[in-house]
Picture 1 (cartoon, rainbow, N blue to C red):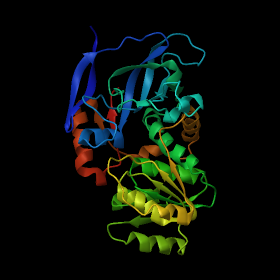
Picture 2: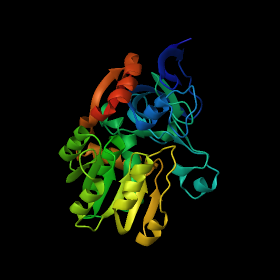
Picture 3: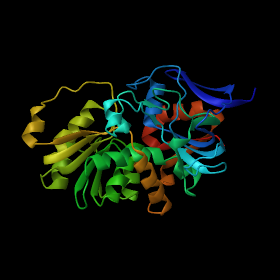
Picture 4: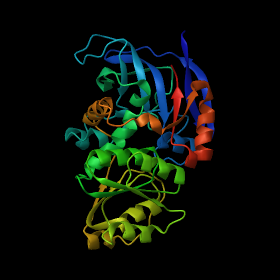
Length: 341
């Protein structure tokens, strides 16, 4: 039997690269040879044991690029040799959300690498309907499309408009992509984080200003930057109670708050503050096919080079080291990429 290398998280803190059977495709599937996979915050939290939806053992991975190895003729134009990415959010198709077209928040959603085994293997089989043509985009950029989609979907949820002042709390990859999405929408963006290195990168990629919460008082800085008005939109990209509170506090009266970060802790706060400010508070989960198609075109246009967010690339054999480095030095790293091809 043909075998392949597969990454598996046995339990929190334990990552192994094992030999597993190479998948055989079923009707309606495409066989992909994975090229690059990005380790995202979800993968890291599963590794650390503090992700809301995780169980073990689990094959991680839902950010990836791949080459189509085998696929039956189809009306989607997907063919062998094509460099692609794929939608990793599996929806049931029958729940109330799916029936209304909100497939990204299916009540039985299973995301690759979280609720079901992911794509961190040398080969992976996926329904051809979930495969998206990379349109010639390089394989590393294509592996970053999915996290960009997560963040850009949140920007759309908030209906960010040109000229608005947007605060992004958390300058990790999802926060950086939220910044890029808000800039794409024509907004002025402020980034907040504990890491000076990440904030410096945000400034180099288009942020107008930053709040370094380890050396500046958050509330004071918000008042200074907005002349006491608050921000039109606050996007939470961390998943901590205190960062959600930051967004509620920093939002202008009649502002909008979008929650992207995922956490397990509770927040005890004065909820009437939402009523007092007449805030719109949104959750944002996953993304839609339209988000993928739009952002592949956007990156292909050369509007921004997202590869500058890749801190380090590891061969698949060193995946355990990649997870350990992110866990130990996350404030000095942005995106770790695994090379499978």
